[in-house]
Image 1 (spheres, rainbow, N blue to C red):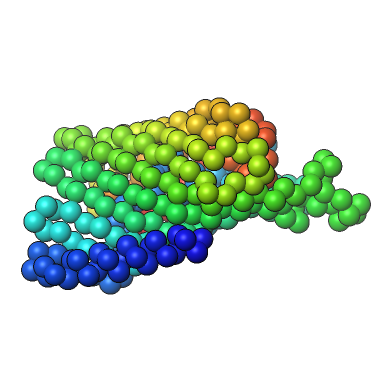
Image 2 (image 1 turned 30 degrees about the horizontal axis):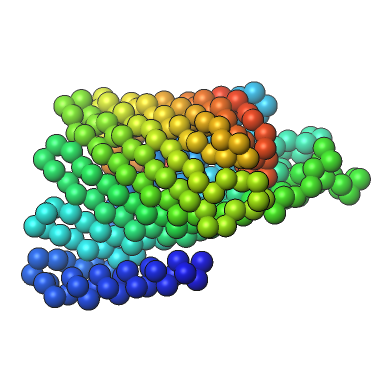
Length: 289
């Protein structure tokens, strides 16, 4: 993490010095409004606020997190923008046990930052994002039996930790009916524990939005999103996260999303990374902007 902070400091310092040489063509902005690039809908390891209900067992995935762009550089000559931001988030598994509802069983926490660049054309937009994230996972008291003072099912907490860099590339096309985005990413963990986890992973996917008009004077869009992720835990498998639903609000801006989901692959809660699950869900989350 010290190396990450040093690289970020050098990047920001160097960029500020270079861009200051031509202040007429580059605009610097501290704490810009809005969010430069929204989190990917089907990437469950990005910040959001929402709840996903699993229909098979009544469990919940509870998301808490947010992004903020700290500084921005605008390049009007090329219609481009570069931002440096921070992101903090966690998602928790909520279960019911012996009549006690909403017990927090496991938590994945993430914090770090990102450097993002976009260039907008007349009918499309290119986006590049480099994320540097610390991820750790924990079993918590909702998985602990107070009567026997033991972890449920004979489980023991796993010291799960990943420090990773993730490079995302996306191309969004604006069409008469809405938009479609294709994207891909590669990720490399500088630290991965347990040691049987593979350090290299990748994913690709799409987001398709169809504008259906306005609701309460706000845009509304039907959408489909799908992401395939290749992870080694320990052998490589494909995770598939499919979503479909409706968003109230500008597709590239602030809004609320209601959706159905189907997920198959490694358990998204990292304390159970060795399990393979298949789950249907109904949920909502907020897009901050």
